[in-house]
Image (cartoon, rainbow, N blue to C red; front, side, top):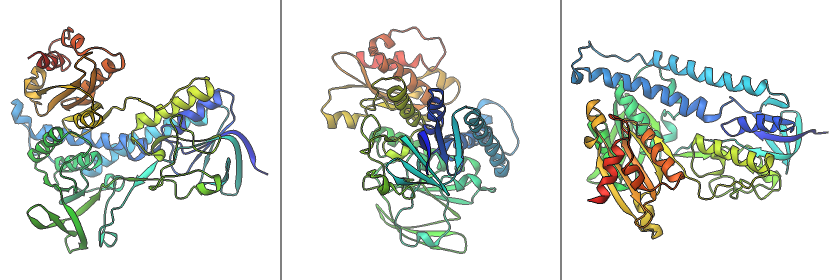
Length: 456
């Protein structure tokens, strides 16, 4: 006979973990099933470890630039094994803290193992059968492998295994120009690797406006990263020194040879081992679980949260998915995903903070807009810190002055973007920010001058 619960959660990620304790506090006996680590991709293989290593890379970068500030230093070297040790310690601290909070919550049973559906709301974990009125799928995703001839016969790294290297690669080839590829490309260039990045689209970060993507490319080239854009990798083969790629790009065929290869060509959902057919849960052509705006699948009582359902693959979106479920099932509310703002930050240096519409999205939707744009060389605080690379760009509605979207490529771009996000959430006109008194000298006061551009 199956063990009966009020709720079963598959996956202890950034939605599943907090949902388990919220349900338990709400009087629901809950089983939380996790295959490997509490915390999901964010704590174990995403945000926490990568941003820890990005911080180490930035220190190396600033140390090499010390003379720009009138400071003398000796030769700069990077001990990647020590960087890895620091990363592992922070990951373990975050992971164990999350696990302890779950285990200490009465009403939650944390079960480690592989979960598979045996019915619409019935789950097998090893030799145990569990059943519940509510089932939540929060199994996340994993790196995908592009269909390149010979790639399966050469050694490659993904976004998880590259963080376990103990020595700096001689020449790292990065396949993919999305935010994961860019972060690692710049990180390892700062650690001391030669880096070549290959992207099949005409620009980096294909979802961004072309001018923003071009500004990002300029920064990476300044850092010494070789970029091959609009490039198709035809085949890969092993060499004595590592891997050789044959690449078709504008100007003809290229041969790219590297000691190490990072495949950063997207992610696929972890749905292939769930036996979703037994539950009647539908997926799209790529394997992502289909849900409506309330995160409901087509099976009553079965929901999907986080990356496994497709859409924006960010920790803060997974956590907001949890809040939607909590609001609807525990608080009697009517929350949904329709029209929610999706902020994100690409942790290159300087950061790229993004919120709302891009210019090309506004054009595609037929939305009227005005644009204000300003280089970071016009920001006093950026000049004072000698961190003046990048550009700020914002879209506003001509009639109401509401902010429609923004991209901030600059020092602490994610923090500046968050100021604009708050204005968007409160329907604050750009004129209010233009005339606001910000402390001097801060990065925030640059918004005065940015919005003055609309008055010119």
